[in-house]
Amino acid sequence: MTGDRALCRLEEIPAGGARGFPPAQGGFTGLVAVRRGGAVHVYVNACPHLGIPLESLPDRFLDRAGRHLVCTAHGARFRVEDGFCVSGPCTGERLEAVEARVEEGVLIVPAAAGL
Image (tube, rainbow, N blue to C red; front, side, top):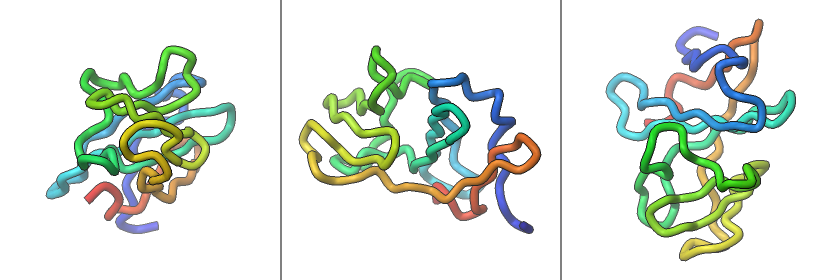
């Protein structure tokens, strides 16, 4: 579709891993993509508790077991599959999901995602 944003090739996200993406031009908030087998889950990279980016180091989004996304500012933990916060000060809230698709091996999101 016109105006959509290509983030990267799927193989550029490690299997079972996560990768961050800067905001679109003119945007304020980046994105995070997590790859689980053939599925990719994309979220706005902002903790619902404070609105700050989840990671303090580039591409460091997952806990040691690779099971949850973690906000390094206060330790909130989010399920990869749906962004639901299972522990921390924002328990019960969710990360903002972003519609994503893979076309010819490329991860694509709507152009407005992450603004």
